[in-house]
Length: 117
Image (cartoon, rainbow, N blue to C red; front, side, top):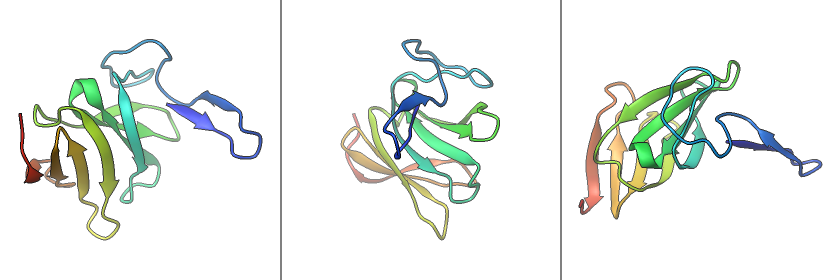
């Protein structure tokens, strides 16, 4: 993940390792093809990011830069987008021609619309 400074348009590495993909929680963490990111509405010190090649939604603590895994699922192939309902905290994912709901507390993935495979 890169941090972009709006005032001077400079960038820096915020988390992960450039040109080094993988799957690793902790610090330093690793992604394999992160695609989109949102601020977690239930924990504003946490980012939720898709991790496309690992079929996962990952967490990044903005204070410590620690990585975690929010959920992994074979259903989450080619994750292209993530958004979060501000009131319920539920997550919605666009993955491989389908829309999925990710229950925040239970961390379960269910198909809402589209087809899989």
